[in-house]
Image (cartoon, rainbow, N blue to C red; front, side):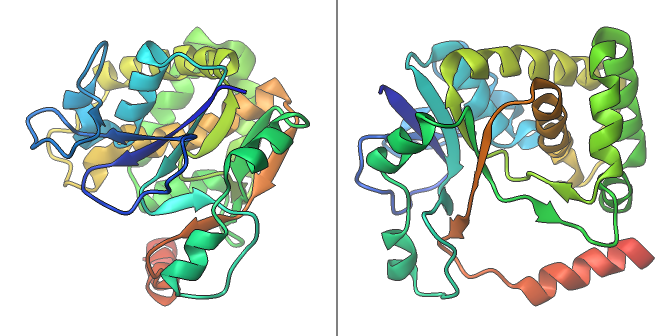
Length: 253
């Protein structure tokens, strides 16, 4: 299997020494060379990284990468063969999936995804409305109704649930990925024309990355693919107390 899994990064960082992983410097445009291939080569949207996040790497792979299977991870986050309850980075590195793991999984499943995040007391829609700008999600829903009405039911179903695949991480056939990107970026580019983010702060300016996380779930809902959920290992310590507190503050503010 010709599998390429992009590892999106904006800085020098430890990377697995495995030829399945393909390191890409996102937001490369105007930045110092890190020694990785940049998302500003070939057909690209590198200059949009502040608003599109790791999606500039996704776009680059869609337009420039040749392979049978493609995936996306992040310099801190990788798919793992088991869930770990440790902050030891060396132990975490040991459970990162390698070529043989992916080859075995892809023989049986259409797509590999992170385990869903459960918001428990929030729906996907209400969580977005409390954490981000409601009008952006509403406009996205309108665009789907206009351009892809066959996805409107899937959009509604995803928005009413409490669980969501986040992080924009996956592995799937390149042909399937190409179909997804064609659908996704047509929506995001239309959304970009319709919303004004001039006064958004640095966090909220990442709006198209946030919207894409939700849209990926909508696309998956419509496709009805055979999915394998895998744990994700974060090489850095996650402050879950802080994350949960922020979630509750947004919910009840």
